[in-house]
Length: 296
Ligand SMILES: [Zn+2]
Image 1: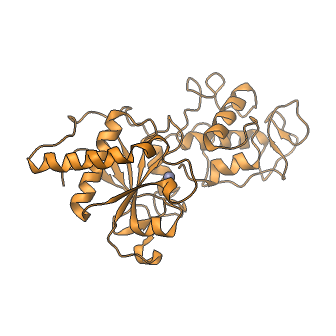
Image 2: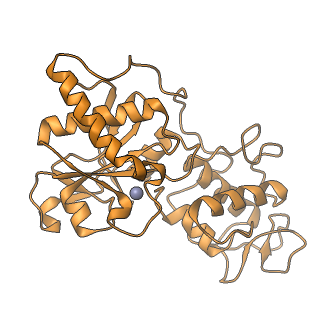
Image 3: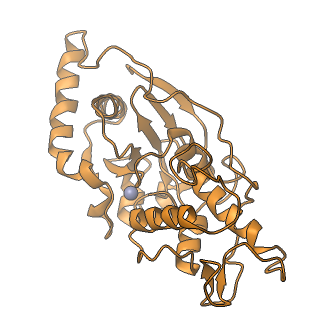
């Protein structure tokens, strides 16, 4: 195998045998995914898919590979089924590859290299987008490029036969890798919505069901509202959102647990990226999307 990229295998236990889905251990296709919202970091996507205990806990979602320019992280061995397609046939027969939604030239080149390596090992693959298996926006702009992917992978095989490659010279990934530090309160492994149904994160001026973080008259699910607001924003940061002082969201006041225009903007952006109703208020749907749904 050529491996014209940095490669790591950080295993996730979120996988099954392919026979569990009624398929043989040999994959016959590749399903392309993207990780949804732009601006998320590779490391955070890998960490998210491995789950809170570093690959040993059940996230209910995984992929075989996470790819960006110049590097690949494998989570599940090719002969096993990752939980990526939302379909028996998709999980049973294909390899799931999570790609960077920005789709830079470098991201694309590394994806081509990985697919060529997979085909060298397992033979020719059929190519799918996630939406071929279930109703989803995934894999975004990659979907229209699946034909080009097949062409570019074939060109890579031809180049390799002549002892060459179509891969550009290795370059550093677009962003330096930084440790995955949550903002404010460290979130635990998922929290249930802390308030009664119909309540939400919202302005101080709102009704009693609007939790702004300004008041300490009552704890909900064991914590003051301020802590829950911080945990919500920290969870988005863990999912790769740029959150905190000097960052893209909560840039001025940071994650202070007091609802205002900055929290509203963050919630709106998150709702938009996830296809939720956009109201800038953190209700149960928005909360569950942040804590319970996978990145893709
Ligand atoms: Zn997907």
